[in-house]
Image (tube, rainbow, N blue to C red; front, side):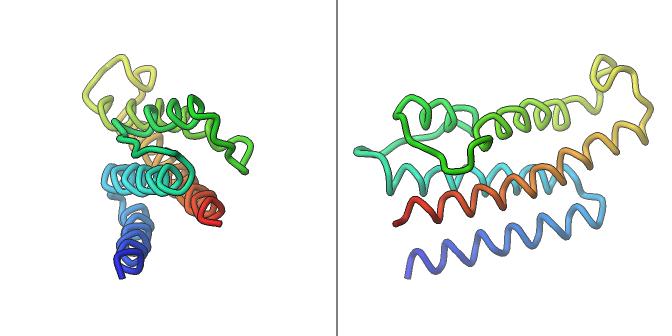
Length: 136
């Protein structure tokens, strides 16, 4: 029953993420994406690691996946996640910094954040597929 409830939460989070992007709530979409990816990592650790693993964010999750030599079947998932994480931080924390987005105007900044939200949504779907493969 717990797995069913978790699945419902993840599906609803992804649905809300997609709706958030369509509605222009890009930071909310990024936060939801981050949460889904973290849960997928937790699932992989649950099924693949010998001991419980605690995550301190997605970068920490990638480091621990690599440190435990857990094989991800999606070859570029780790590197794509690290790259997205770097851009996600700029999107979340860079709106009010002149140094972020190379001096871009407001509309250009919003476009960059929108792209991060869309990339994150796609990345979360890839993590869902990956985590399902580790349950075997």
